[in-house]
Length: 238
Image (tube, rainbow, N blue to C red):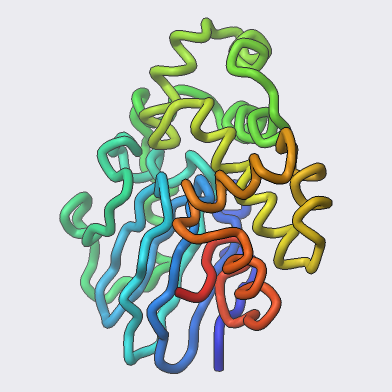
């Protein structure tokens, strides 16, 4: 019973962070923004969870749920749909792409990965995509990141919207918050989390908890302390 994460499907590690499943009835939960997008099998329907800009309250399900969590910027290149069009949404995959009604999550992902990517949603190679994500997660500025990959800041701003669903500064903020939530889940004190995640100070972390998580920081801390039955770094109890 409960939530579990597993290695990504074979051959998809560059695109997929993990496979996850939740056995048994799934209670409503607060899904936190993490820069990722998921393919989700929910009640026999395949859904695309777009990039969130703030916490999303999932309604839960009486049935088991499973999904594939894609690395930031990876799923839009497979769908051929700009991430900005999927921002803060949950949408049936069939509304975006034709899929076999009996296809498994792995089969869908493998099929999509084998198709040609559009220039709009895949302007960079996968190594460059991961490097942009890494640098922004580490706190690099938009100008520094753009210079590193040989683009202008304006070009990076435009491309990030299609690739990630938001601009590089917002992505950097969300990835910093994701790191903070992971550190909270690991049991670190908020003051230590603020320093390690790259916040100016602890009040800065508190403000992001409210703005991105929709709850006071202490509620995230309490949820992390009493529940491991949620996606690590992506969700907490409602």
